Length: 127
Ligand SMILES: [Zn+2]
Image 1: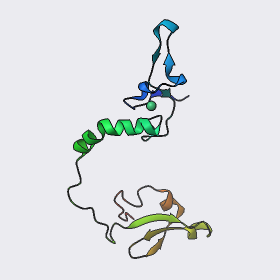
Image 2: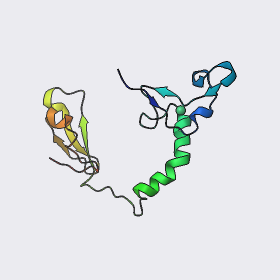
Image 3: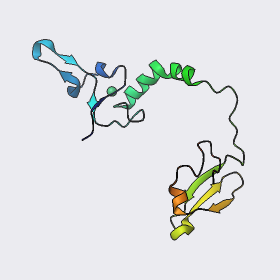
Image 4: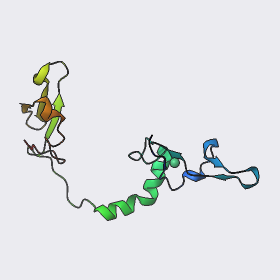
């Protein structure tokens, strides 16, 4: 059984829906939604509205915390690799890395294809 968690939208409780209502007649209140899983904000917000609310309140602070990009990021042939699969082929022939600047294609084993470390987070070939 998965654990219930609260929507992280700072205004979630202000949206007036039936499923947010709690309490007896004389003490009605709306509460933040609680679910085992959410679809928005990487699984942390119940709706696109709550995701947007989170960003409006915390987005700038998140950028300040993790740092702004102050120079352009650059795509070169060194970091233009992407793991791909050709569904029309069979066996190990269908797995490859593809460089979308040079259009070079190198075969992979299925094991390399399934391995998240075959390409680094910034698109460099690690094998
Ligand atoms: Zn919400």
